[in-house]
Length: 111
Image (cartoon, rainbow, N blue to C red; front, side, top):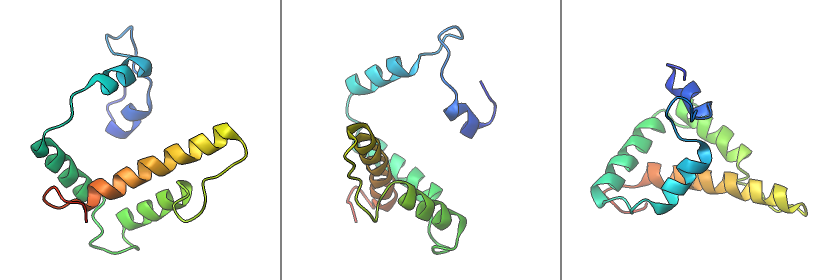
């Protein structure tokens, strides 16, 4: 496992190292209880910190969000006649919408 938190997210967890594989992690997520309002607010605050737009679209977070918006088909259709490609595109879009929703929450309300 890498000491770099970004690179460590990219690595497959190892069962040999006592960790869970991705399939095990997904099963745990499906069974996890809904987070409390305080946990949701704390998570939203973390997203707002990570994706702060104080510097506008030319800031580093703004550039990252613009790149993600393009990659995640936010301004175009995610439709494809290939079902697997359409599902992948919708998955990307869902992740980006979550980033936007959580980074814009204020006091438990979506803005």
